[in-house]
Length: 463
Ligand SMILES: *Cc1c(COP(=O)(O)O)cnc(C)c1O
Image 1 (cartoon, helix red, strand yellow):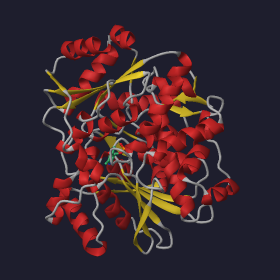
Image 2 (cartoon, rainbow, N blue to C red; image 1 turned 45 degrees about the vertical axis):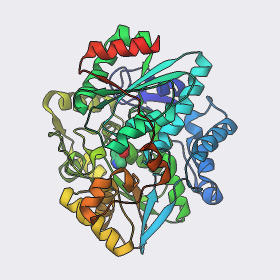
Image 3 (cartoon, rainbow, N blue to C red; image 1 turned 135 degrees about the horizontal axis):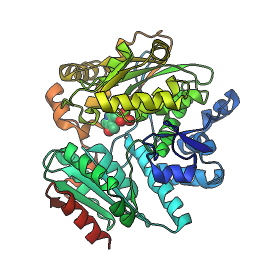
Image 4 (cartoon, helix red, strand yellow; image 1 turned 30 degrees about the horizontal axis):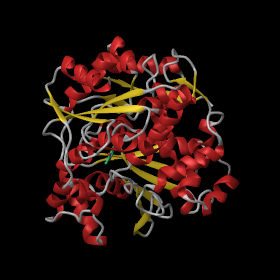
């Protein structure tokens, strides 16, 4: 498979280059040249397969020629064996036709493990082939950093540096990063905000000499391999409920739109998906877009669901490109308008296409607390504050009751004990693996919010 940029000015690349490049050189995002198809017989044959088998089948065409089907299957089997549930992504029924897809059975208890556990292995393979090493540098407000660390810890060909805002991530989130005992993992507690962390990572990328010297790479959600890996759980859950012979709908708590776009990929591959429901918290840029056709940034508002507190959705560009019939020039013009004036409107036909694919819903903090309490009262199930946005959105969508609605369970509630306690008056039970990190020694360096200090630390450590 070959990959092209959503802005049309970067070279067409093969899978390995797309994996290691991340962002295209024209500022765009990579997408496969065409959508491979999963026909009805192929989907039916998946009904008895394990998650690792389904994931390998879904990803096969995207990596064809780079890794053989047998090696890919061996890799997905190894990847998903570390999850703490046999089904990898088990489902819980919460209503007549309402389902929760639990995506939090990986090492850091949030859905990002499904892609990042695989990404570490894909990186290692690519770097082995090239005889190269990379230095991964990322900023985190919580979940991405720990999942990236868990995916890269102890891998031979990479060092990983994660910057987080000192004193501004939860204790669980911090300990999930700082208690990992691996020589190639380096946590930096920065005296600053998450935006400061992100600005420093950007500045390091833009310092070409520095970037080359350390072979800097990124693991943020614009990497195509993460989207590809996430498409698998759409397919696995839909075939369990009867696809291809029955359609399903998905409610997806969304921020950078990586998880939601992975569903769009599954739809393009032939999975019968009736509708996507894009669930947002008070940071509702995606909801406003689907309502009005206008995409406009506002300031970020801190909420009870911090992993959805974002200003712009980086993966949304992939959908825009698709909504405009893959017209890279039209897409590049919209993205230029976004950076110049903070927003744009799409034309009526693109807006109509978006609305035919997706419904949306916004839930503020009071709504999140009410939804956690409602679900607990009706079923005994404890939602995390991100997933609560999803189940509330699923109910609001008013779809045909014959169509199963699958809400993505994005994180384990024990990762967000204070939000849960503010809704239920009690904290959720803590799984043993999460309790264990509360006792382990922590390792992090505290650095000032200065580019030179962070660069000196990275150069010193990676020598
Ligand atoms: C990352 C994350 C999200 C947002 O997912 P996107 O792919 O960025 O849309 C939602 N909930 C949780 C718990 C997350 O960690």
